[in-house]
Image (tube, rainbow, N blue to C red):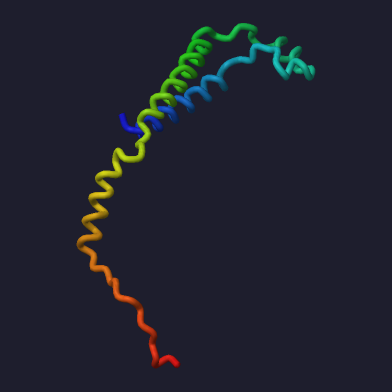
Length: 110
C-alpha cells in the first residue's frame, strides 16, 4: 500500500473515532464532576455507555495506532525513488546546453 492510501485510511478512522466519541453518553466523573456538574449529568443521563460504542471506540483507537505504525514503513526513504529522479535529472543536464564561458566586462558602459 502506498503512503497516500495510509493517510486516507488514517483520516477516515480519525473522523469515525471523533464521531463515535461524540455520540457516547457521559459516564460521569472526571473534571465535570469536580466542578459541580456531575449531579446534573447523572440525574437525567444514562449511567452505562452502550457496549457497542465502547468496543467501537477501542477498535478504532487500536486501528489508528496500527495504521500510523504501518504508514511509517510506507514513507518513501532517501535512495528508494531518488534513482529515477537522478536519471531524469541526468537526462535533462545532458540535453540542456550550459554556457560555461567567463563573463566579460562591458567597456561601453563606462
